[in-house]
Amino acid sequence: MKKSVGLILLLSISLFGCMDEESASQVQPQVKETTETAHFNDNAEATVVDVVERFGNSLQKVSLLGPEEQLKKDMYNNYGDVVSPELIEQWLTDPINAPGRLTSSPWPDRIDIQNTEKLSDNAYAISGEIIEVESVDEVMNNMPIELVVEKVGDQWLITKVMLGNAGNEDSITYTNKEYSFSFKLPNSWENYSIVKEEWEGLSIETTGGEKVVEAGPMILIRHPEWTTENPYQDIPIMIFTLDQWDLLRQEKFHIGAAPIGPTELNRNENYVFTIPARYNFAFPTGYEEVERILESKPLEVE
Image (cartoon, rainbow, N blue to C red; front, side):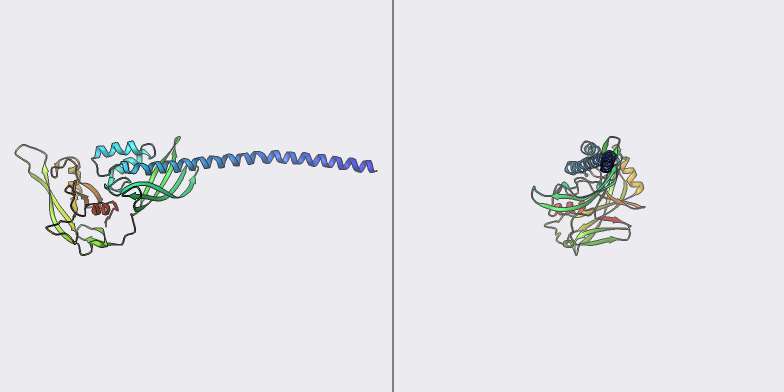
């Protein structure tokens, strides 16, 4: 009887051991698969972070106020490895609202990433700030930025970018009801004045001398400290109808002697609002402040 009981116990232990080995063999592949998936996700996220950081380091190399052909060349040379061609082409149609360098100082130094969110196996959302500096150690502005990075073929590329407003400075607003736009100004511009002038478009033809073939309004927002003896840098806003803007882009007429045309700030259904080329060529008092104001994309339309 004792031998029978012992035999039964021995068989039970053997069977239990076999079941454990069989269960372990079923669980093991699942653990391996989970580990490989986690490793893939870590690599993908690290690649996405690297793409955004390289993009941030390239921003200062792209001057958004440069000539059109040079801007296109700079964007593709500096952004081409990290930004989709479709997004670059979109920026080229509206460079003033694209990421890059608008002013000589401050300039965009980098992107500090604050959050990374996986949207799918092939897409990540990134949020952070563009850090603008005036020197190596002097941070001037923090501009919020949100990006979407997607896997296109075998390459991770930025496919969407949304920019916020730089800095947290309180502002006042100039509103123009005639042309349906508003312009945000720092509080230091309180008691500003408005000067109305007119831009003139000259014919391209040289026979018979240049003639004025187009004209339109130009509004100067003038700093309260402006004086005749010490002119402060104005903020000049040239206003074009949509048809006039198309003709200018087609080089049917030109404005002034500068080989570079005005830069678009914004537009509504009737007008295009621009900043003249070389508006600050004489570097008057306050020109750097005006550059910073323009960098914050202050002109809004109704």
